[in-house]
Length: 166
Image (cartoon, rainbow, N blue to C red):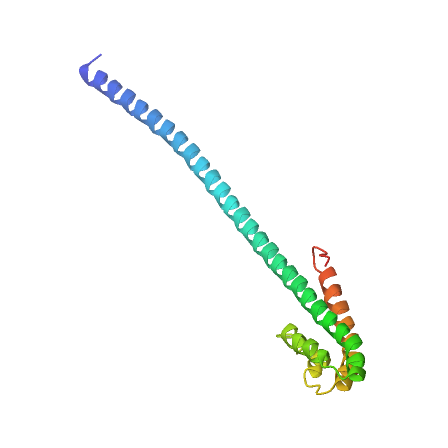
């Protein structure tokens, strides 16, 4: 065998070895690309899951806030109703006794109605009563208004997705 043939054989062997190494590198590169794609898909799915969790948490927080707002509103309307009820029973006796205790109740009602006068206009009208008779007449109408508003608020609370109760 001549030296040219040996050199050609060595060159062919080196080329074959280089091709095998390139093929092995290609196989490893493909596996790395597959793993990278899988990792990217897993990361994308984790990001979507995290976004969905954040969205659900935000919806839950909003529902909790709305439920708390309704519960506070119910308590406020109940308080106004208690004052109207007290006024209903106190005003006739004050008229007969010539007392003005009903005015104290009227003034307490004014404080209780801050922000509610749009929802309870008949209750708010009592604030303009100058006599026990007018306060009593207003309380007669306002009692029904309070009951209707409480019924509406309780139905709204019960209809919430979580079925909150007052």
